[in-house]
View (cartoon, rainbow, N blue to C red):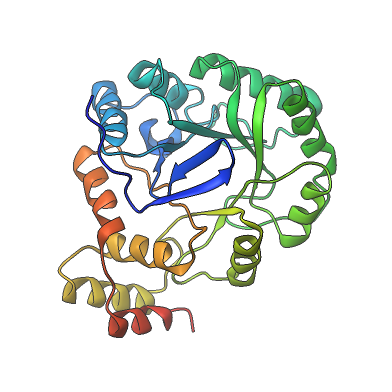
Length: 289
């Protein structure tokens, strides 16, 4: 396997954890609505192998995608894993029979989730485990001390190397840091939804990665029109422009766009090399105003 140069450069989360800023999110490898198997398992395997061949060293996943499906496909496609490839997973939710996402934050549920991720990925220890606390697009108030302490204990046992948090507020991050080091934060953020601007800057000062999801989610029609217009002038796609803007926004931002298509994967990776002229950058910066 010939591996290309890392797209978008790299970011060091910890001494033993350096990843490409352009990563890959495995959620879309599952079936519709992230439930059940994909229509084409061979195509899913091909996308993962292409991602690694293209130099990506950061794959984001979870055992509750499918459930279990994406992790099993990752193992099939990439195990034994090449040196330097890092798998980041998350716990804190389950999938019910109707495809819902009920919380799973008890001690037993979290320990089971970590062991399940280990088994389905074929690993002895997980590089990073994110504790998902809030809903799909916003933090929820309350303490995360109890569930995060469980993950810190599993880290002490050697089953987890590093810890992160997802769907959290600045206050919850500080609470987590009082228990164990946090290497990354996954929250909803993009061109049009910038509630975390101050948080991103604070995390950058601390050397903590920020991983936004829904890179073009929640746009108004006017905001979408502006994005499309910029993309048209640059002769590229709106997704590429949105991803390129995020990489430009702060050096600690890591991207995990997901796709089940090799062609779309290549388009996403190409966004890492897209240069945004100052005029277009100013127009994009005004989208959320």
